[in-house]
Image (cartoon, rainbow, N blue to C red; front, side):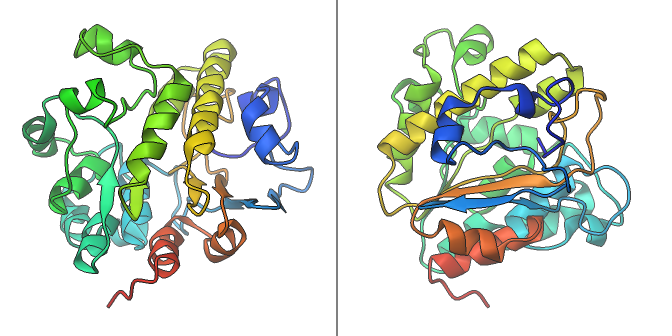
Length: 297
């Protein structure tokens, strides 16, 4: 999802109540002001709009956007266009060699991907040979743990949808019912074991492609409650960063992606510094490495 005007008729982010997020952000909402800007901060938090277009025409897509997010390289420019939802063959070597998970591990840091994958590593490997998603592809390339059904049942992983309703219906009926707040608590606990932990949520994009304010407000309420669970159980010295790979859900007048700026929200002691370092998708990796004090050559 991106950032759009303060128009509750077409922008669910303008219509959503966001009780958790607004309490964290001093009442601010994730919408653009009348001048098309979004920059705000307070004690222990900061937020700004960043660019997902990266100087390339057309609509940003997940394959190139997430590759840029995970490598610090201008992936759509290198590929010659935006591409997605999967990672194109021409960028797979870059993503495999230069992804953040792999670089962190090579520099002595620990990294984790909190999402559960049906079938664990074997299942992820099979899917990666066809149309690989950037996050599981990078995780495999870095030899980072691929979490499975057992991890999800025992609270050591999350379903990409945050709650387990869809997972229970189509993958594992034995999985426990998990509320958004409980999922947030689980993510906070996973993060305590690693220098860097990533979680990827797809439903905002899925619903954006299908339109419908009711479904959009439902999923934003889920995300808001989830963030509350994370923050409540987060270590006080940790940094929580929320961002996206392209715009979509913020404009229900279309079912396509948008060229709108995307949000970068940060909560924790380094929030102001982090937001000041990142202007677009390719700025995320160098900011993380510098924040963790890891030299990258």
